[in-house]
Length: 121
Image 1 (tube, rainbow, N blue to C red):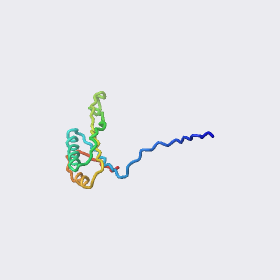
Image 2: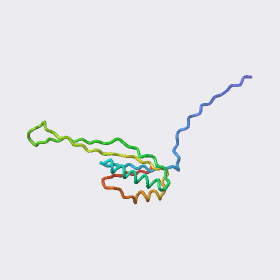
Image 3: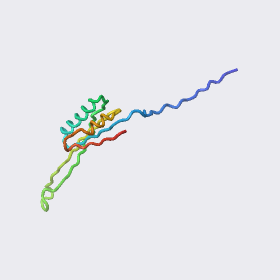
Image 4: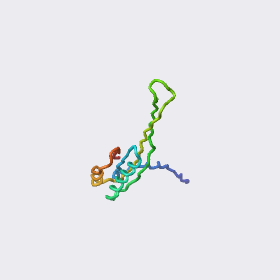
């Protein structure tokens, strides 16, 4: 009597997200990169003071907006000036933030001209 070997294919496991792990994603923007780097360093120092695992800062592409205007209002059509605004961006991820870290980050005073977006993932 011959026995038949049956092979069963197992479906590969999908990457599942651990329910216990949450992430705090901080996106920082500024027109001046020096002010941006100072504020990012403040955020990183505050997070590391409370023993948080920090990923970043990750530099994101600089957004450049260019504007072209005429120098004269009526004549000299070919005389033009170009202006640009550069927005520098950084991304910081804080893994498993505690309430102490959240409170410390909200009480942080950053220089003017720095825009912060915070998301909980």
